[in-house]
Amino acid sequence: MTEIERKFLVTSDAFKAEAIDQNRIKQGYLSSVPERTVRVRIKGEKGFLTIKGISNESGLSRFEWEKEIPLDEAEKLLLLCETGVIDKTRFEVKSGSHIVEIDEFYGENEGLIMAEIELQSETESFEKPAWLGTEVTNDKRYYNAYLSKNSFKSW
Image (cartoon, rainbow, N blue to C red):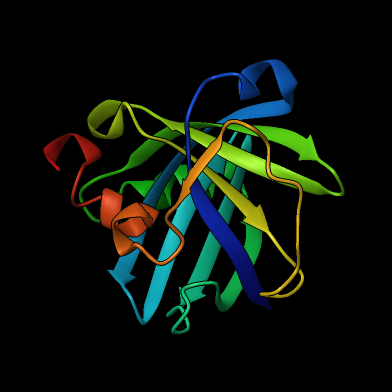
């Protein structure tokens, strides 16, 4: 139940031609305090409830618990969320033995394109696609909970 991931900015939209899947995502936060974020997400036609703990010092690892919930319940829970629902399209690209998830944001976060890659350990190596840019793993501004309150356009 530990999530280990690295985050990167994306330098071009070349990833779109490599995408093996894509889904529109809307998500909001019932709690966005760093010690425990509670997220409601609608991904395509599915609903999810996710609880994440605070990141470790490197920013790479943190506790994560996620369960699928009925779509109608996710829609109702989104109405209870804090201000600042995130709207984005997630593209999935195969890179070596990994899947890179690229989020293209809309609304107040339009212009931001960010990639995440989940790893089995903090030291695991991976193939880095050419369109992967600066690493922002330990920059809290790039956490979705932060973006829901402090839009990318306002930076």
